[in-house]
Length: 196
Ligand code: IMP
View 1 (cartoon, helix red, strand yellow):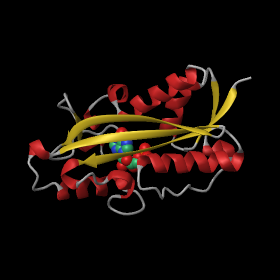
View 2 (spheres, rainbow, N blue to C red):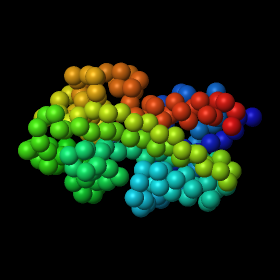
View 3 (cartoon, helix red, strand yellow):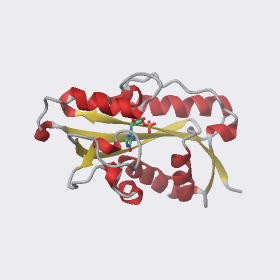
């Protein structure tokens, strides 16, 4: 029988991507599939803390192995903001367009060469009492205006290093082959496939 592994998320895009990698080995259960309908507050000060809070909350409550992710954008000229507040940069509830407008506003006096930024994803995996972390990062810069319609969040503003298109101008499979999330997920998958 396949082992059950909870992915502490209800994001359908992330779930289907994770399932495509892991379904041969694991039955991946979402929070909804588990019947856990309350949102888990992300009260940590770091991506690592937030991912761990989510994985530990579910694992402790249900006694199941579990992993969770937390991601965000760090802009150098803003001292690493929006960071862990990326989803709610312009307030709650999450509004991607307002977040992008606010980011452009805050960078309005910053020259192109100083608009460097980084996306990061941290995955926390709870197996029994042990916790493991997997990290993915991609460097890039913030464009002068929004470009492209694909993706979500800050994609219309993020130009990965070595490219001229924003994430939102790229085909999703191209973004997904280089993204911070893909890198962290690949590390998780390799770890799980190696029999740990
Ligand atoms: P989450 O932890 O993956 O839900 O990401 C938190 C927030 O970071 C999102 O709401 C987005 O604002 C931003 N973010 C994370 N990953 C990406 C991405 O790949 N593209 C654009 N925005 C992202």
